[in-house]
Length: 189
Image (cartoon, rainbow, N blue to C red):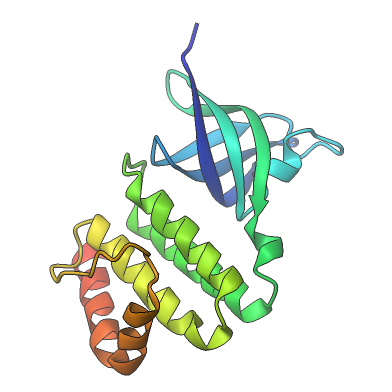
């Protein structure tokens, strides 16, 4: 019998696999970034379909097989796609998620990535659009730091996206963009 892992996760991408299945890339709170097979999720009326859409945050039951992960259960907790209402913030969310998936080629076991992504989505959903560019820059910088691709220090405030940090990024935008570019260059992308 295989061990079941219960964790919270955010679906970053979903790719068709066969006629009714999908491969979901999930950033989990406890396991890190995993790619898992979701059986029958593309079938009309599938129970797990709503909990495994892109940008949904769900309580997941994952089973580790010989070669890959499988989703055994999912309960939707937050649909970030619906909470992030406008097109521009959704594009920011997609851009940052895509970059993270490119930076992490396989699977990773770092729970900090989940906290950053959740804070990023929460900020896009709640903060004024004037701050969204700074939120995007800060999220990318935090991802690069966790992955060891940014040598400079980032303030570790109580809030991941503290207003004073966002104000500093807005004021010194060029400096932060340069740091991001150096980090991406160091990754080899």
